[in-house]
Amino acid sequence: MANINLSTRQAGSGMQKRHLSSSGTLIGGVLLIIAIISVVVLSFWEKKLKSNVAIAESSYEQKYANLTQGRNRDVIDFQSRIFALNNLARQRNSVTDNLQNIEKYLVPGVYVSSYKYDKNNKIIQLRCVGENHDIIAKQIASFKNVEYFSNVNLISTKVNVGGGFEFLIEIVNK
Image: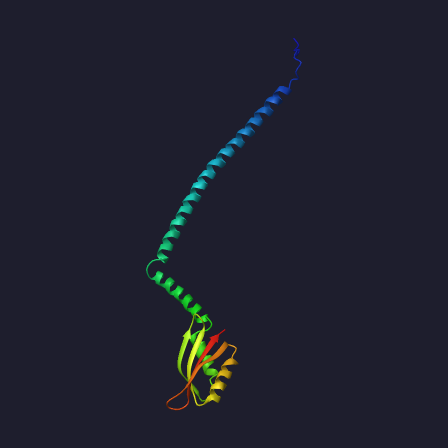
């Protein structure tokens, strides 16, 4: 007897649909497994990174503690003192600068008997001894020509017992 197919469906199309749906499920399952594996790997990697960060932080704290204890604290203190001394050395109107300028512009025949410096007001008071009034005038003119000094005033003069004149000059630094 002959086989007659009474079905309206075509013979091979159901097979293809079943094959396509099973391959889609298979691809979805593989992607799901890859995603799960990725999440697990990333979570382990995160834990490892956190432990490495904790180890690095504890190592840093230990090394910092070693650097700030004992002799190292003295070195840091010494360095801060060096910075302070350098700043003091760089300040204008220091005593050595004043004395160098006074020495440079001191007229022959005049000598300084006392020196007083007011750092806050930048005022130098010199008690000097000279032979006569001409030398005193030359000395004041010499100090007035110095750019380092902004103002020079003669405060007092008196006759010295041993001869000559004693005079007090007030100099204001710039």
